[in-house]
Amino acid sequence: MAVGRFAPSPTGDLHLGNLRTALVAWLFARSAGSGFMVRMEDLDRVQASADHERSQLADLAALGLDWDGEVVRQSERFDRYEAAIAQLDAAGLTYPCSCTRREIREASAAPHGDPSPEGAYPGTCRDLTAAERAEQAASGRPLALRLRGPGTTVTVRDDLIGEVTALVDDVVLRRNDGVPAYNLAVVVDDAAQGVEQVVRADDLASSAPRQRHLAELLGLPPVAYAHVPLVLGPGGHRLAKRDGAVTLADQLARGRTPEAVVGILAQSLGLVADATPCRPADLVTRFDPTRIRPTPWTWSDTP
Image (cartoon, rainbow, N blue to C red; front, side, top):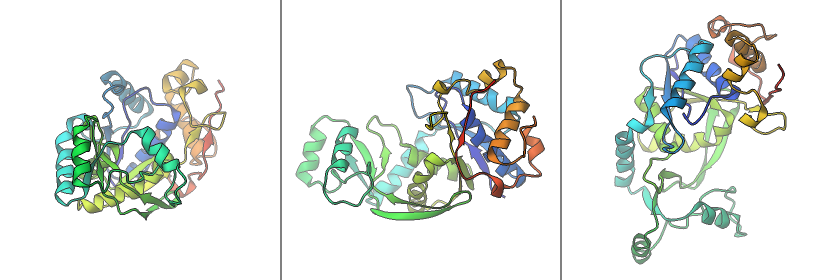
């Protein structure tokens, strides 16, 4: 049995793509007779809010997606992240970095024959001399903390999309505003909560190798991954509010019931033949992940 979870960022209303992923995560867990937890990834201090959290939890409940135990919030777990950073630091696997995003983009785009993918950290601050470190510290620029990555690719097996291979570069562990970074926090939290399976949208698939590597360094158990194909807007881009009635509230205002929305999502995944209204509980005994369509679903905003 794989303990599952849904971990949204409370920075706005959940759209149909988010709810679709939540449905799959819930079905994976419940069809295995397993636990299902909700965690709020609220490290974004500017956009995250209690109002958004309440709205998201209300939407999950309205669709019939229940969870076990209390909702966990990353903003309340900084001590765990700092303990993990201290462990990596003690092993000599961290270093400070003063690079801005613009500098990283410009360096990675420069013609230098490096086979690293676009956007990968080019290692600018990795091997500074003692004098350069002192100059960096005295500059007054805010410093992020990076992992000394292996600079090689790591492959993980995904239960929906097959093998995922990506470069594990020098990922950020703590941002230059002092906030722990996503890749570290999610690894620490999944281990602490006993999560065995991570189900999320496939735009995050490339982060799985980094997270697997971090878990190994920290001596944490590996998780299984299942990345769900994205929901796209009519223009072929990732679904967003500009695409019309994309939230549960929008759909209810259009006259649809929560059961009708679940039926639409289930059909879009290939789990049912037609969009007959249903509840998630109706799908548990017949859930078959091999039926999930491997391609993105394009949402059409029709009443």
